[in-house]
Length: 367
Image (cartoon, rainbow, N blue to C red; front, side, top):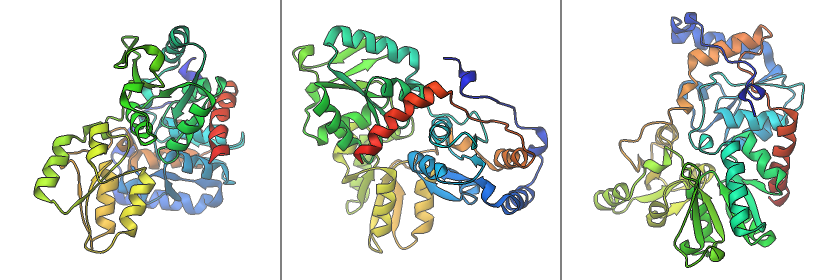
């Protein structure tokens, strides 16, 4: 598959936007939003910068925002997130709606760890070695191509909120499952379901090697793709130990994209929404160490001054690819939209969108 079939345009930010001050850009964005009204919808992921999220018409996780976009009458959806999120929005919206990603460099390292060629190669080898009784599942944090592959082979997408339900569903249908592309979410969820680590294997797409500790391949139930989130993998056991030592009464809450040992030692683990809801519902004076993206942690600190909140990793940086979307790129994107241009449009081919939607719909039927 050629990337040109997905990303129809990709232009570099014009120099003039580098010379505009924040006040000018904010005024421009406000004016365009007012003038375009319901013709424009701006979804913003929780991990976006404050300078961008302030203009979002809705905040949420990737699938939530894609589904919300599909319910809008807006002709233009300017998605403040990353590639795979904009792709999902294009899959779920209608042909009259145009999806714009303000900066095409806003990708996701996890999604990029599984491409179509690698996945087909893995599938051929795994089914040859282990038989055809394997069902693929993919985290929604994956490319349209991977969602399409999974949909074509009878599988479904999962979110961090419903992963337990979807893994249980998959194992009721087939003897084994292949979980793409985040090994940590797959491992942590499978353990919650009572599946022991020695019943899991890791597929390395670079070495094309299956790593396992059980006595034989026949005992493998979960095949984890060797992928990860570059942000959440930076939370370590040392971070947990440091918090336990310096703040023993602090509750540690982490995202399930963190490593198994970190999730195991944390007090609570759950999706981005789960983390937000838990903090919002907690008592004044409560103390929290949060293991997730830094833009969101800083926002929670700001929004809850009556609670003591820190990042589990004090040296954590915001997600670099999420941070690609900034005021200059958002201003540029909106001015192009106002002019009727489709600069940085994300458009998934009909064939890929059809199969990817099968994977998404199977999940939605379950939840």
